[in-house]
Image 1 (cartoon, rainbow, N blue to C red):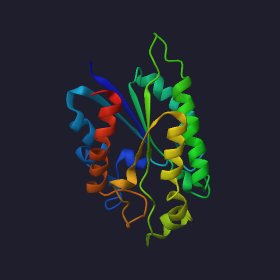
Image 2 (spheres, rainbow, N blue to C red):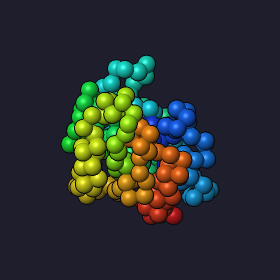
Image 3 (tube, rainbow, N blue to C red):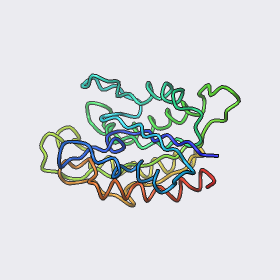
Amino acid sequence: MTKTVLCYGDSLTWGYNAETIDRHAYEDRWPSVLQKALGDHARIIPEGLNGRTTAFDDHLADCDRNGARVLPTILQTHGPLDLVIIMLGTNDMKPVVAGSAFAAMQGIRRLIRLVRNHAWGFEYDAPEILIVAPPVVSETANEAFAASFLGAVTESGKLATLYRDLADEEGCGFFDGGSVAVTTPLDGVHLDAENTRALGRGLEPIARMMLGL
């Protein structure tokens, strides 16, 4: 039976291209790479939104960026699910949002609870959850991004340890995105085509294991 996987993330999942200020080609985005790797055994649902946070409001866009408020609707839309991959937290580093890795970790915990306690219905079991720490924010000469993510170079470096400990505590899978991908110095936050592809390749083994493929 084909497994269904929801990839819940922000612009790194959407495929933001810092070089062109556009979107990476479909085949270069990490959910697409993961889909190709898993083939007919899985159906990958990419659910990326630029600026999405774990669980905090950001009123600077004409869409709801609060990941916790939107998640239940998305779960209901795409259910039943076998695996939910959550890669969020970078936007939480913005001082106007939360500004700390600890806050992002608390937001991830909230998302885990939402998945686990969702009213799945029809006797469906709650899906497995894979927490992915996004690659660390890097130094950039881009003044707008440097100002928006002030302090994030240091704070984002704490995410992997916090997320790993949380995953252990909550019984979730964990993957450190920074182990296979690095952010581009063009804006310090996003991934070039090669690094977003690398993320998809890196996630294949653990996704395959968690899906029992």
